Image 1 (tube, rainbow, N blue to C red):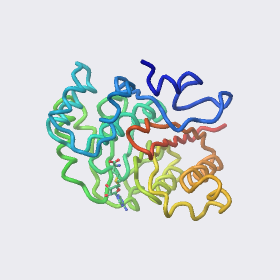
Image 2 (image 1 turned 120 degrees about the horizontal axis):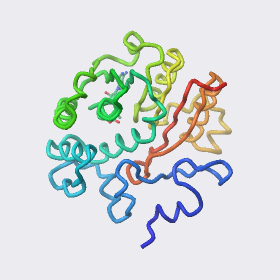
Image 3 (image 1 turned 30 degrees about the vertical axis):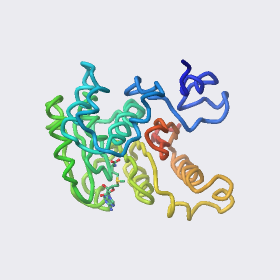
Length: 265
Ligand SMILES: C[S@@+](CC[C@H](N)C(=O)[O-])C[C@H]1O[C@@H](n2cnc3c(N)ncnc32)[C@H](O)[C@@H]1O
């Protein structure tokens, strides 16, 4: 059977398509959990219902990702789609953000940041930052520590607003933000520029973010695309090398990942 992803792949790699192959597709294949490239199973990855024992059947392997996913299922940690958002985002940015310190801003439960502590041996400290620490953070941390006890001492949670983040983060600290919502994605860019940090963002909630974007671009491209184009030019003008990639749309429609590295010659 030819899957949807295989059909897309026939005209070039999914995710980041080189310019020579045509415009970048806004879909992507599963990389962290490749078994979900079978379209028959993809509906599961976008569910907003909570992880549960019923999900164990999807994660029967011996590897660390499956073991962590099983712990999260058993603890009913959070909505199913958030597992895939975190893992697939992490898989796309982990090698580009190799820094001893990583900060996950507007992190919620914080799984995305915690994956750096679990899977990247050279990461020494992960700062999770949110103005309100949800109860699910402790549940996720317990699951992480059950399968990756080495991660515990690398993780700290700051229950403070974004506006105070710079007080706690050193220059060069890698910054990630998954669905930080609206202008907070722009505040993450502000912070990255001030720290000269690599940054990886999965933006959402574009209603109020398009204001600085020329009206013709908003009308032609739509607010979401125009806003991220504007952000990209902003990073580029500051000397960043910018790349776009995506997580699978089966997980979320808000799937664009913008990566900026302060290394442009
Ligand atoms: C849509 S949630 C995303 C959570 C997480 N990144 C994820 O993908 O599951 C947005 C988060 O931003 C946090 N937030 C909102 N305003 C904030 C602020 N001013 N400073 C820090 N966090 C904030 C909220 O508490 C919430 O956890």
